[in-house]
Length: 189
Image 1 (spheres, rainbow, N blue to C red):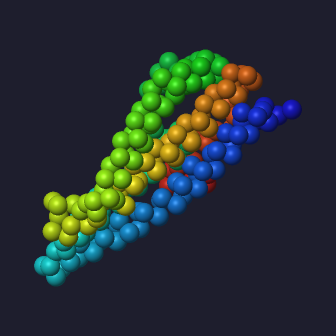
Image 2 (cartoon, rainbow, N blue to C red):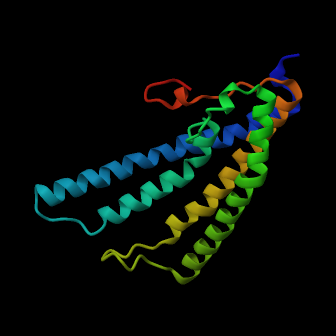
Image 3 (cartoon, rainbow, N blue to C red):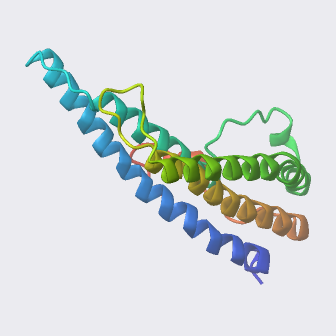
């Protein structure tokens, strides 16, 4: 029996497809963000006619990209980690520490983030809130919707990571995990 065939590893792989799909979809937010920045630069410095919308579009797309890509980054182990001691530990000890960290710190934070983000979204939706700091005054609810959606995606990926920890506690080996090398430019996942 392969070590990746435990129910924990099987369910973790299934949940990983959500973060992977959302990460690949969200990556496309880079294109309109870069296009709006380029449009603004050309408009401002070539035609001397700056836009009123490009800055707002850029910060909304970048903020959404950052939040919605967090689950994919978690899956790919791309978040900053200080592992001076961790790297030398056996997999079971790593899994126990990771599991405790997810249960004590990660899930409470993500739950608060999703709950508060949902409140921000509902208020923005019901009042048709706009960014008053902008002459363009775009509506805020699409941007604020990214907060609870990011919380949900992080919650799902957190469950996957906990399942991987349980698998490791049972078998003594990590299931196949993507590494940060898989997210380098030009690398294949």
